[in-house]
Image (cartoon, rainbow, N blue to C red):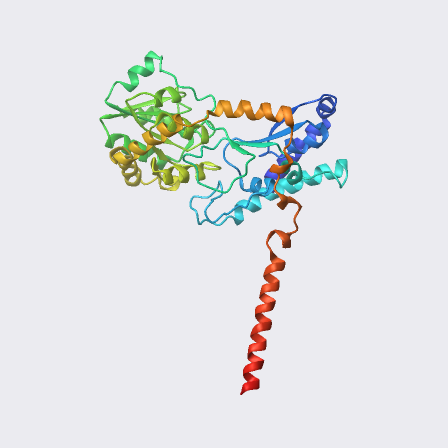
Length: 398
């Protein structure tokens, strides 16, 4: 996976460098350059464009490689990687899948612009701010820096549902559950045994309306099996944010993508989290830790009994709803809105540029200095020396 990603990112970065766009950007002056670093090509352009200030953004939380790049200890024992289902899962596979892209992009720019061209880590470390889309109120607590600014939930304004059709759907029964696995994963191509499990689950709760986002309404299983389920509504699209705000929507079965997670928590609804890939694994773990829902492994979707049990727990255990409502109130009661934080920090960056004091001195340290290895070597040497002296004294006494 790492080699494939590295090849793809490097190819598109090469195309960008050959397009002539960079020369146009170099000819202009920018006060602020805002760039996402999941694809590291963007941050590598900063040295060429030379803006007054660079702001790095993450569309979720800080990724593993970003900790090293901005000067934070990873503390992976209690800060799980985005790919991990548990706190104790090995990170070797994930790290090996990410570092090749970083190395490849670094090599591309050094080949083009000289060996002294600053690396991804060097340029990222000089960012004025690092914006994240994580919500500290329910995120996993980790070390941070003054320059890391969480601005979650922007554009998730409070709205009232005005679609007459959807009002009819959610009021047909006392309770409604909505199901969506996001815009990338298509529910219509899930394995047959998964679909059969969902049918059994729907039929186990006949007094609840289920709304399932399903991309192909003409798909064979949809027209032959799902159509028989009286309490199921299939739809290619739903006003998810508005539905979650309706009082009769009592549960969201979701892949735990960051957008869905934020809509869910802002509306104070419990969730059944079935992560599929990427940051969804950590998001599900995060909300499970928060106590606002149930976590189900996607590999267990073929077991109808486990799916039914998970839905039943999420619906009947009132603690999940209570915690979801508490989380909603805390988000609403924050002293500063995400919009204010965004605007004021961008304005500051445009006015003053980088604040050198916010860049950790660890960036200038050697491995030995950072880990105090020289101190530990000295202490160990003294311990060995004192032990030897003690042995010699004992031998002399004897």
